[in-house]
Amino acid sequence: MISLAERLLQHRGMRQLVKFGLVGGTGVVINLVVIIVCNKLGPDPHGIAVNLPWSRFNIRTYHVYATIAFLVANLWNFQLNRWWTFRTSKHAAWLTEYWPFLLTGLVALVGNLAVLTALLHPNSPISLPHGYFDDTTGLRNRLYWGQLIAVVVVTPVTFLVNKYWTFTAGTVSAAAAAAELSSEGADESRSPATPAP
Image (tube, rainbow, N blue to C red; front, side, top):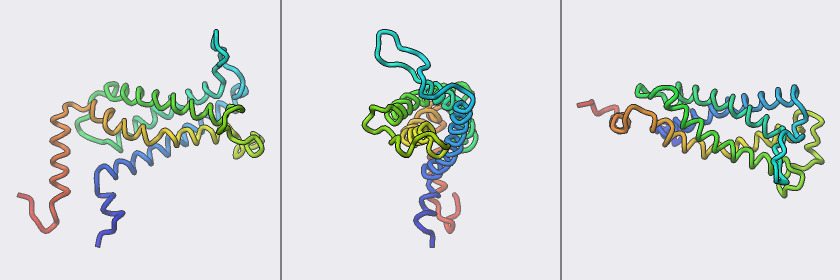
């Protein structure tokens, strides 16, 4: 008897979600490694990187670090998702698929930076508490936890947009994608006892 979990994993969309999650997990690790390297080698992450003229706002160094980490992890995630998660023989050219993935990622980056700012800004109502997150060790570093939380918050949206736009819009044709889906659906609906026609 097949369990519910096995039945769910047999569904193509669920398999893709699991693979996307695994790829995303490796991307989170890469993102955090880049953040840690930037934090260790660069200036104070809470310092001002760029003053925005005619405004009381500014870009902090942690925004720059998060952007660098995003660019590295985004490229990693794209290549791994293209090769493994959304693998098909009907991929378009690499750049044709990368631009929508990058654009989706840039939208996610804006969300990531907003969440990160809310978690790190001392006057934010959801700022990480300074009592525990005092930056004395890696496990108590506000930047690391803020980045991790921000990535987790924006990941579900990026999955949906990439599944339904990036890796389908870039395929050779919508008709070819529909034909591939219908043939996979027919294969999944056949029982082992029923021979193929």
